[in-house]
Length: 278
DNA sequence: CCTCTGTGACCGCAATTTGG
DNA sequence: CCAAATTGCGGTCACAGAGG
Image (tube, rainbow, N blue to C red; front, side, top):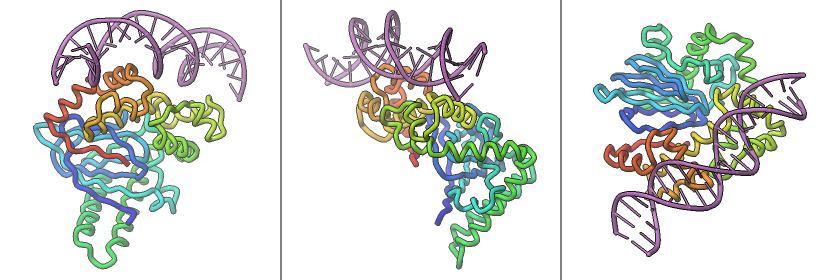
């Protein structure tokens, strides 16, 4: 089954960014909170819909006073690749794209209803339900592409689309190899492109530089290991792809806002259970 | 004493910017 | 697209404090 669905209530603290290769649509059922995509931040209200493409780092956070609950539907891009227009909402420049569709908009309400229907199909598992779910996903994607069509010109879409397909192997390679020493020139060699071309490509599509993206991958891995293992901080530093401990402490402090040790202690207090790796 | 964690100074070079 | 200029990352070293 190439479609998955989960109900999830994010923590109010300490959630770690994550990435995945599948596309994802989130629907806020209740509560309040925030949704982060890279440096973008959206306030969440019940009924809001969120679009997550592959490889953009993201995380939701609950308002401690009123925790938010979501349904997330995720699926492989192959499911909708049959029609290029359906990909429009998922191929964008993260820098400019608005990942949220506000609950007041009709598109969000329609999509919300369908997501609830997907949920019901998934629970009841009636005859041939996977077919019904696939058709629902297609409906959602059609609604999304109609919604975003007005925001994204065909020219821009075609451009981003082409660039994304070019960059996809770079991202895959990075996600598989960030634990090793990894340089832009290695990636460029893999793709048989000049370093400067890859650099521009990367910045243009991902909205942040190669180094920053890599650093976030590594710090995120460190956070995951801090939460889920008993490894020493120095071990975690090396396993996350850092070559010595000093840059690790600095990067961690810069991105997370506290030292690795403090992070682990805080996490144990709060007992944060969630951390995903693809 | 040693180990682990964390910080500061410094330096070379890769990453990025700039200017053709 | 390339080359020169600049920036800032990440690596080394040194050291301090906490705790066993």
